[in-house]
Length: 265
Image (cartoon, rainbow, N blue to C red; front, side, top):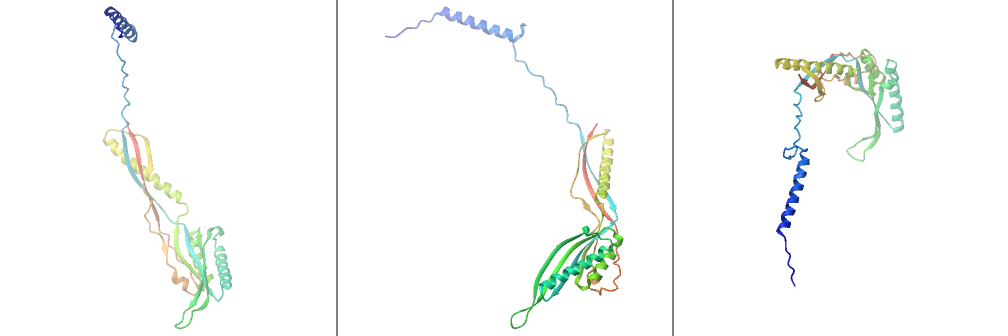
């Protein structure tokens, strides 16, 4: 048997009035008790402010120095009938050469062994198998002469002591205090960038402020060519009577580039 649900119209009206009252009370409280209608409060927009105006400028600087050191590669090479004899004589000859140049001011710590090789040498014939002639041994070392004025004498003394078994190669002039030269080039590069930046800022009616960033750009450039000398002819000359190898220092120039960002005010 079905059930009949009777809804009183008066009850509905009462319920609606109650709900309307509750809603009004809520809105009244949200408005702070004032008569103004309730509304969602909008936060004030705070301006982040403009970014500081900046000026970016590049600069380059050079520093020139006179080389004051000399380096070269030293090699003792000889051929002997057996390997043991070749090694012993190569060691003895290298020791004599190093002892000689040590007496001219070359420090033991400035001599570095860079290689040792040994291999058999054969004679080949039009018929029959090759025959062993002996063993060739080569010892190599890199030498640094800290006083350039002694460099030519050291090279010639090494060749004279070793005779035809000694070769000197890759002679190069060097600047001992490279950091000091770089410091001058960097200071000149920053000064160059600042001078140009001040010109642009002044033309715009502004002044340079604080430096925001500063960095070196690109590889450092060595403007001077490497100083190298071929001394093969001197190495093959008779050991006796060799004069000191003439050395002309010339100049060594380094260039540095920087990029600087300033604030403008």
